[in-house]
Length: 144
Image 1 (cartoon, rainbow, N blue to C red):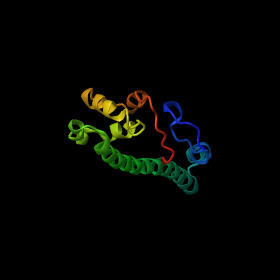
Image 2: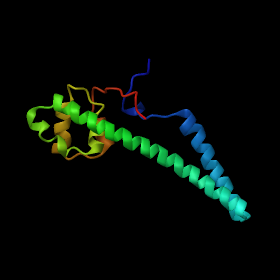
Image 3: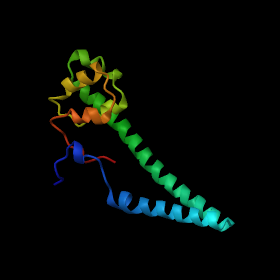
């Protein structure tokens, strides 16, 4: 059973990705770039370019996965809000930004209406601020 989730521990850390593969790729890039700078041959320059490309691929792979996840959360939250919010707030669902919806996904059904109203009325945009307002944290263990 996963440990209880809250604001302090909700970020996903994948040891083989964040702690091994990416650092190895970054070290490889630094090493090959240093070699290309000190001894510029076709081989060293191509190796440095490949090292840079691998680091860029790591960043974009993460960004692409998170972008798709955010789109799914946006859809899920819009559907959830239609069921949980009072009629006056249902009409305001299109006003929510994706970052606001992503932050609100951790709120329980009971506290969602009040938090949603506060987010819209106060025009809160910072995900961290919104997440810190949640008192009954609902875990999300299926994140990318």
